[in-house]
Length: 160
Ligand SMILES: [Zn+2]
Ligand SMILES: [Zn+2]
Image 1: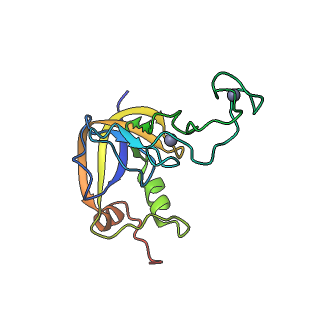
Image 2 (image 1 turned 90 degrees about the horizontal axis):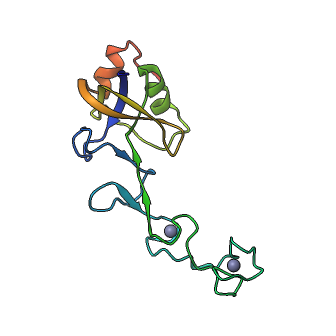
């Protein structure tokens, strides 16, 4: 089923296409093909420098931890050093939710009047890392600036 989605598309992102539709944790460094990010807790090394207690044996010592009771394998990425991105763009299913999200004073992401909002048709993929909607675009419906988007939806924000 095709639905309409709304997304703030930052100027430094690659064009909004189905091929580029991979989402990652905010601020994580992407690998060359953009489908994975470097693991943040281990800095991409796959090793946990804090030597946490082995998850398999709870410190009782087993073959996995080489009978030390500790494991240096990063638990976030299972020693891979990278984390798979989620398929699909983070987006919103209606303009009001998008606007509410980006105008929430407690939210860390700053949006400027010139940032672009893209309305696109696409297929829903499920939920992303932050519980946001993920979708793969099939067709761009409209691209506006943030200011135009607010005007368009008659939701000009006055508390800036
Ligand atoms: Zn163990
Ligand atoms: Zn890791």
